[in-house]
Each structure stands twice: as structure tokens, then as C-alpha cells.
Length: 423
Ligand SMILES: Cc1cc2nc3c(=O)[nH]c(=O)nc-3n(C[C@H](O)[C@H](O)[C@H](O)COP(=O)(O)OP(=O)(O)OC[C@H]3O[C@@H](n4cnc5c(N)ncnc54)[C@H](O)[C@@H]3O)c2cc1C
Image (cartoon, rainbow, N blue to C red; front, side):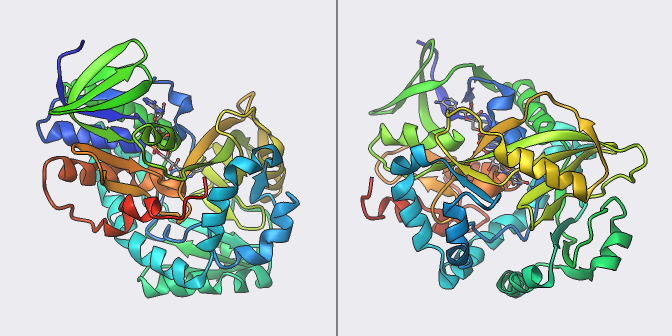
């Protein structure tokens, strides 16, 4: 049996690592438990966008109109694996119940303090981890192929405006001038200038790991299989041993649902899988200055260096460990080759990760309602890279009895535990 720690953090993605670091900085003896396969973390392979404007959950009011094409898997934004459908029906039922304008507005109001704090938290983290050269206020572009598609995003613009998120609208010609790498003709684009991005987020994660160890943080390279509450703390069983800790943070991304279930909590955390593939830019292409969401393809293209980009797919609803299906990333790559002048693919195989998604599109951050010394920090869905560092600071506040600087009432676990028991 290992000597006891003050706190064990389960999961070494952006959320877990940022938490472990913030806790270590408060002087706690911290053990981080993770199997440590870098590419297995969703935090490794995302688009790296850190945007104040990322406040609009996937369950949008527009979803209802798109449902027929989603259900036929005829829209690259979503691929539903029908073999997985019976397991995901309860999640989808709760998810669809959120797809109303009132809920969209409420979620945006709850998320804005978190996303507003995100970039500054990234700056603090990057300064400590020595990765400031990977973080920049690049802005980001949402590009619309038709005027109708732009008009369809009016509610989004209204909500962003209401929360003071800065954006400008460009027509197709102005966009070409702003971003000469784009060869596709777009009707309109929204430029979110406050947005930053992390180039190769996996490198940030690795730098955080190295910093954690340098600061004296302890590592256990194995999966946690069980958590047992004791009178004075927790016994944590992992592959290869057990560990004692006074407090535990569950930050295991999409695996958090299974871990919390063993303690009697039933969260609907779904795997919204997504893929990426890297491409060289054609030698004659100007570099891409910032990430671009091509709303017509439901895919993001993010620069990962002056001469290469990462193409990222939409959402695949499937079991976390199901074999990959490359249909969406192949479609996204075909579309990207008409958006930019691309050279050949860099990697042999696309990367696959799972966004840890909750039905209301908000993370679960807070103290566990039925256990002492247990903190939940998961379910960050599409915004976990951006809001991971600020979540880490919140977790450190919760563990040390301080009030978090960012309001977290809306992220309380209780809101999801109170849902009708459909599963
Ligand atoms: C295609 C795509 C694009 C994205 N783009 C963006 C973006 O631009 N901006 C943004 O903010 N977000 C983006 N995201 C979302 C973001 O990547 C995730 O929200 C974020 O990585 C989640 O971080 P996490 O730490 O919760 O989970 P993860 O990074 O998945 O980390 C969880 C960790 O827990 C570990 N673990 C699991 N089970 C156990 C266990 N039993 N014991 C110990 N450890 C365990 C895993 O090994 C893993 O290392 C994107 C996601 C995808 C898929």
C-alpha cells in the first residue's frame, strides 16, 4: 500500500492535469493517476480553440430542423452508429429536451463566466509550463457558404452580442483579404477576435505533465478501477496497487461516468467522438493564420504550424471503444481540400478522441453530493481544452475550502442527477 496523499486526481487530460498542478501549487501532496497514453487523451487531439464565445451547447433550437438528415446520417455534423442507439437513447432524450431557445440562452449565461476566464488561465498555465509560444490571440473564423446559412445563425449572434462577445462580420471578398489561404468562396464569415488558440494542444498537455513532476507531484501510471470511501479519506484501487488519499478528484473525461456509477451516481456522459488528420499546406499556399470552422462541412481546420493544418471532424455518437469509422474525417478532408490548397496527409491513420459530453452541454464541476472529499470535474464536451485550466483553479479552490472566483452553481452535479431515471 502506497503512503497516503492529500489528494488523488484521476485523469491526466487538460482538466486533470490543470487540477493536479493547481493543487500542487497550493502545497498539497498530489498523486495523479492516468494510464499515460498521450494520444488516448481527448486533450491531445482537439482543435485548440480557446474562445469566449464557446457558450452555445450542441443541443441548439435549430437541431429539430436538422433531425431528419441527422437520423439518416446525411449530415457530416453528426454520425449516429445505430448499433449503439439503444444505449444512447436516454442521453439523447435528455439532450433533445435541452434543444430550446430558453435553455440555449440559460446555458450561454451560465457558461460565459467560465469561457471569459479561460484565456487568462491559459496564459498563466502556459507561462508556468514554458509553452507561451504555442498560445496566441489568433482569433477564429466561422465561415458560411451561403447567405441562408448565415441568416440561420442569427440567434447565435444575438446571444453572443448580449454577452459582449466581440465579433465582426465579413463578406466573401473581405474574408479572402483577411485570410488569403482560403480558396473556397464563402458568402459571409464571423470573426471572433478575442479568441485564442493553442498550437498542438498535446504538447501543452505533455509540458503540464513535466511541470507537475518537476513540482514534486507523484504519478501512478495505471487506470483506477475502484474508489472506496473510508472514515478519513479514500482507498483508490488501480491496476497494480492501491493508494490512500484524503480527497479525490474525478477528471477522467468520458470515463468519468463509469467511475462515478460505481459510487452510485448516474450521470449521462456520452462519448461524442471526433477525428483529426494532419495535412501539409501546398508550398504555394499562404499560411492559415487561425482556426476556421467551415459551417457547411461542420468541420474545423486549425493551423498546427506555418506549413500544416489539422482537419477535425464533427460528432460521431458511438461507444467509446468501438472501432473507428473514418467516413466523417474523410468527408471533412475532402471538403478541406476545396477550402485550402492542401498537400498530402501527414499521418497514416486519423486520430480518434471522445468529447466527454453532458446533455445540457455544461461541465460537471463541484463537490459530490453524497461523499465527503470527492470532487467532480468532467463533462467539458467541446470546450475542455479551453476551460480545462480555469477548471483546475476551481478544483483547487474547492479542495482547499475557498470560494471559486468563477460561479459554478450551474455546473453542480445535482442538476444531472435529478434527471428522470431513463437508464
Ligand atoms: C475533434 C475534437 C475537437 C475539439 N476541439 C476543441 C477545441 O477547439 N477547444 C476546446 O476547448 N475543446 C475542444 N475539444 C474538446 C476537448 O478536447 C475536450 O473537452 C477535453 O480534451 C476534455 O479534457 P478531459 O481532461 O476532461 O479529458 P481527456 O483529455 O480525455 O482526459 C481524460 C484522461 O482520463 C484518463 N482516464 C480515463 N479513465 C481513467 C481511469 N479509470 N483511471 C485513470 N485515468 C483515467 C484518460 O487516460 C485520459 O488521459 C475537441 C474535441 C474533439 C474530439
